[in-house]
Length: 178
Image 1 (cartoon, rainbow, N blue to C red):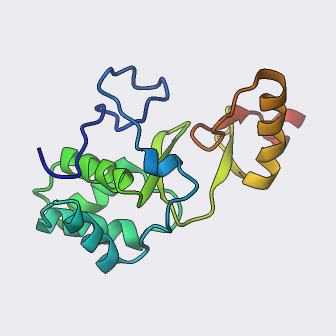
Image 2 (cartoon, rainbow, N blue to C red):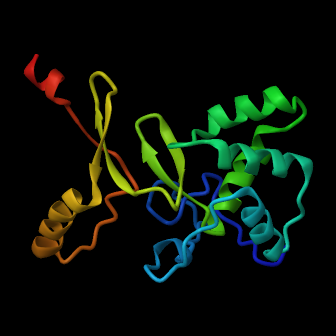
């Protein structure tokens, strides 16, 4: 097995209950407040991957390049379409595995939205997703605003919630009025 590589579930999901896999493992780095800032440029990410014993194939280089160019959320399906448009021979599983590796080394984090799992760079501001179950509108709630909800959950249940991992669904203001 490659140095620094830990097998994860097929979904690449930490043990959040979504993937239901006994092989699912959690990347403690992602959940530690003491983690240094993730690299935010192509060269630094490539160096980090090499330090973890990973080969830098042309496919992996193209995927990392696209990740670093992308602002906001990274949809694995959209990433696959983009990369396969540039490099037709790249298998979608290579793209998914590379996104998972980037998460494992702390460059990306994933969250589960209405459209499925999406990634964002760990150096981007974290937020909670509010997704309308009727029209699909997605709005962001700052972590400061979400802390009130987290504090309420903790006060009543002693549970420390990760509100950034899943979207909170409901009705947006427009749909609630109609």
